[in-house]
Length: 243
Image 1: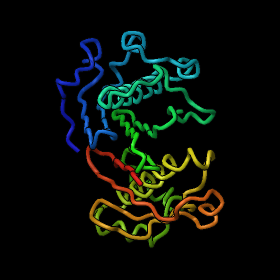
Image 2 (image 1 turned 135 degrees about the horizontal axis):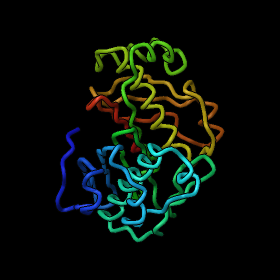
Image 3 (image 1 turned 90 degrees about the horizontal axis):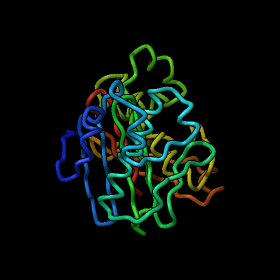
């Protein structure tokens, strides 16, 4: 992924120190992806007021980094909303687990790290599942420690055809499954474990096939197979689901 400042989607002079770059992809008239690269140390609470981004009380009471990440994520979603010309309420509220509540007819997903935020929003009747996730590459020690909870050796072996390092493979397994969770959450409305979705094939260099646990799929009347695109760049794994 290459991020670049897009002058046609200028976000305002006051945010220029905080926002390093933006990227907007109008994938169709009903689908938009936006990514924001930001500098958390340049964050100010005043940004919420200046750019009319709602500032929930639980976010106000959180750490400065959490506030910066939340603002960047909502800014990314606003860029998509503006690009699509969507007329929605100014406040995208959150449910009890912190997931965005999108207006009827829209599906969306937001993700962020300490330096990147991304949003993916669709109003296409042909796209039922929308999920996006960004993960910073795990240090080797962390990857070794958590790998057994994230993916089995067969899954990691599948990813080895595309990703060289063990850290990338574990982080990618984590990220692609997180993207699936976000895409399915509106239908399941609860957390489910990493073992509920398995990487079963590498369809292309940057696209994997995941299979949902058959019991979970039947219980919620969901498909078992999903395609997830991923990219390793800038020290992060970016994953997205559009099914």
